[in-house]
Image (cartoon, rainbow, N blue to C red; front, side, top):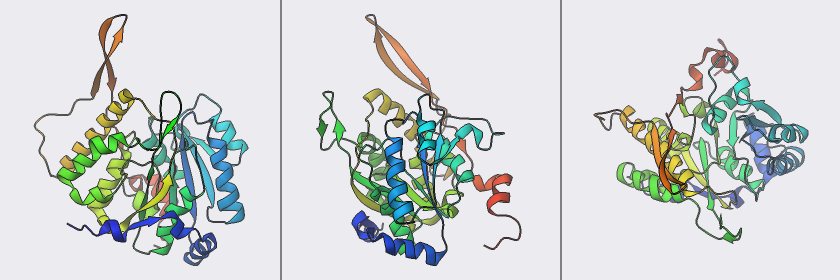
Length: 328
């Protein structure tokens, strides 16, 4: 097992703070870079994110070529605000509209591949309260500086808001430590070197993303790491220290649903890789309980684990991005 990856492929965002150098590398390599923000009811944070990235990484330093918001169907003013501040805004269901619509972050990321222009795509969550342009350039830097790196993932300290709205310095990443790290330790110990495999901030080359299946929900980060590792190995990946990320935190029941989806994705990947032979089908119901007027009642949610195929398999995607006779 390669235990040196964490030393050779771990960076700090300050390693790439010379933005003029990154812009020069981007131009020399003839690349376009897209920033994609998947959203669902993010009216409180979306404006600040767009303003910072447009001012710092488009106007001042032209590192980004576009900012694309793909929305799951917000019921607040997320889409209107994003348009007002200059992002290209899409409802996910309006992209490739002949396909049946699903709701989930992975669905937004997958459909974004069809409307973004970039050779490099940066995916960032839209609920980051301490947003800074390092969240983008830190992830882009290793992709431009190192020819062998094709995918970058963020890690950071994750302060967690307590009930009284004070901020504790640590405490985030509970599903990582309770679910993913034990699974990686058992089955893929080399991947334990990825410090925050479930972080929602990552970037990579289109040629990588277009070859990956995308679970529509919480399992997308797990499947992405496992599939990249299986296809190309750990060396094409890197991780970048972004220092601190403050965002809204979910309660334990919500994290349970997240863990269910991630476990299901992990087991399905093990099956597809031929590493296990499951004797019965996995169930789709996450069963939790709640107290209603003194009575205990089941609280059941269907989590089917729908997965989009690699988008390069879609004829309309190939016609747009890989037309016959186009240079490779």
